Length: 68
Image (tube, rainbow, N blue to C red; front, top):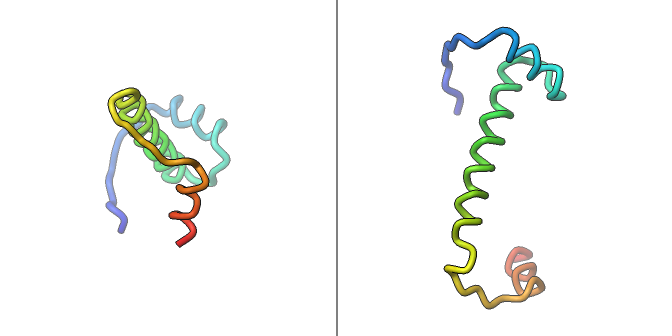
């Protein structure tokens, strides 16, 4: 599902962004940045849980669960 939105962005920022990302459109560049931001926020939340959760599974056990 897409949400059509109009925003005003700094032209220089968009120009710099387009030079850095291998995408064809400004919209795709903005979507990639949003996805990256959200991924980083999730990772930050996970790192804050370090030492607070006891997890007792080996990597092979996790892989078997993912193969189902």
